[in-house]
Length: 333
Image (cartoon, rainbow, N blue to C red; front, side, top):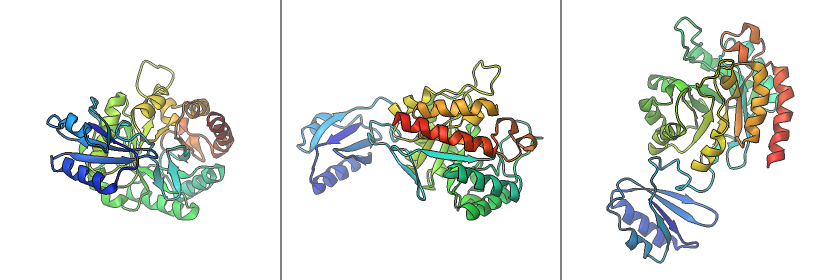
């Protein structure tokens, strides 16, 4: 249920209404916009007397919400959420470029790539330390050593870290990591999502390989319902009937997610296509579709990469792509 308050409501009366609603056993999510305040009621609202609330002179309107996701719902939070990572902002008109290798391999590799993507315009660096792989025989990442190398690269470049977490038991290792990524395979690892809701750290939540938009939003709901509002949604391609690409990049998800939710939406064209030469056109298309940012894989030596080399751009290719992305971004603003 949503309660929309009139403009310029007395703060004492607003707090009195919120306390009354909370005493009914409801959670109250307060969204303060430029022109109005919206109270999102979470819980069993079946016993709430909508006529009584509507009759209050500080209330503009009362609406029931049929969607099962509440916290992530734009109806509850009409204004765009802006997720801040240090000085970097994502959402609400702020566009962010995230780049780096699929996996951290050596100190020299991660530092050189981090410096290159920063020079090209990236605001955050990605790099996998813990790698979920389809085959148990494939490179699984350097784990805690990989996190140490990411910290060294951060110190060298100033770029905040985006890296994937796979297990609740690893959370202590990620205490000083800037953005925790939940990969496609863990999108519905609900125990992990609930724990991440306790962290208050920015969470980059990737859509699962065969999951609907509603399921993605419900996974984000798990995080937000446990107290963490710093969630970034990521479209990274889904499994369809495509036979020449790794996945199908669902760019229609970008405007639809923006319509349904207030959370920022970024796109990963690297995992979506699996082919380096397909990354630039899809990155430009994602930007044109209104994405709040892009996460792109960049490797200094893709042919010898230990993970996902075929989909990685070289630093030179990335540097050539960024101005085109920014031109598209400027054109649609």
